[in-house]
Length: 71
Image 1 (cartoon, one colour):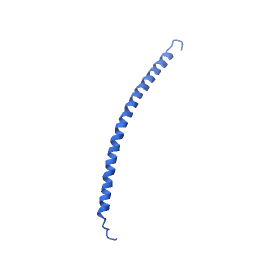
Image 2 (cartoon, one colour):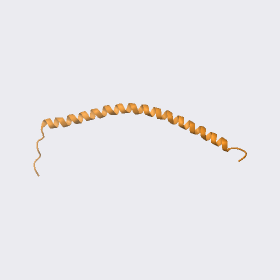
Image 3 (cartoon, helix red, strand yellow):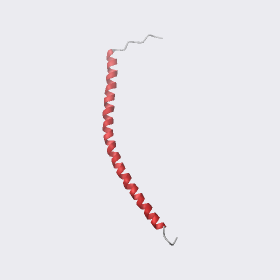
Image 4 (cartoon, one colour):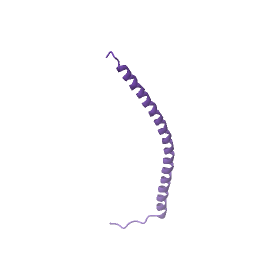
């Protein structure tokens, strides 16, 4: 096997700089997306409550229509 080649300090620095920039970018993007996702979850929760209320009312109406004396 051939002996390892010495890597230039500029290349080493560039690799670590790119790693750091990537981590910083990912951290900022994650923070931004977390905020927008929290807003989406609030809206979805509100819609879920409204949908469950409509379903509950529909079930009550269906049960009221089925419970007749003339079955």
